[in-house]
Image (cartoon, rainbow, N blue to C red):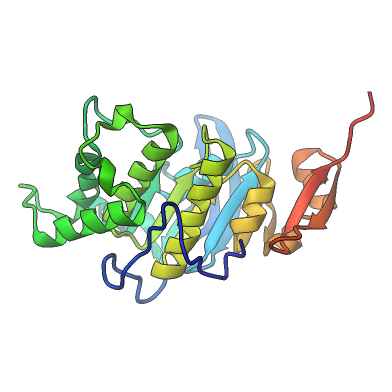
Amino acid sequence: MNPDSTPATTLSATTLSAGTLSASATATTLSTSDLTLAYGDRHVVRDVSVAVPPGRITVIVGANGSGKSTLLRGLARLMAPRRGSVLLDGRDMARLGARTLAQRLGLLPQQPLAPDGITVSDLVGRGRHPHQRWFRQHTEADSAAIAAAMEATGITDLAERPVDELSGGQRQRAWLALALAQEPDVMLLDEPTTYLDLAHQVDLLELLTHLNATLGRTTVLVLHDLNLASRYAHHLVAVKDGRIAAEGPPADVLTPDTIESVFSLSCAVINDPLTGTPIALPRPQPR
């Protein structure tokens, strides 16, 4: 679907009622300035300056080892910059306290791990920790946010199920609900469709699109599938060798020349007959 439109339904006909989850009054800006990230002596992201469009969905794509997930880790302050900075609403993120940052940034890592035996409702409840004091006093606002997050992701009926008994798609929705319960200004998701079949991939991306349109939260994802990235992104960032190779609307980025340069793959590009977004068709390789 076109990400500029709001779907009537998502997942199991779940909709958001007004006021259940707080919408962002003013979309948060997230950007980098000459950002360099490294593991030891190996520089993985090099001198990257990028501005994430506020209130929109940005998808980072690139070949394996290109630095796309490392860039997302830098945006989440999971890695300290070797050079440069990450800015949240124009402020250097390194100067923000951990609690403030946890209230403003929600992260869904690539392979999140839940404690053994934890239930879905308890997992989602952990998203409220940044809003609670050290003694973890639970408030009515916490209960409302948890219930709304589970409703929005279609997992209310799974509340008492252990997370380790869920299917891959159900687990991803539970982790997404945790991030939603956190009520962040920015959501960062590292390959959230990994290990999901196509139906569940589309399910999850439809949900993220609906939540973005409803709540107006700035959203950044790393995806492998170029055609899904093109379908659901407002803004594409293509990474090659730790640098930005191209960025902009999908129609400007998903071109034969860019795909060949970034992925070393010869493609034809056509318009999706259902959405009008570009689709990359790999050319058959001679044997």
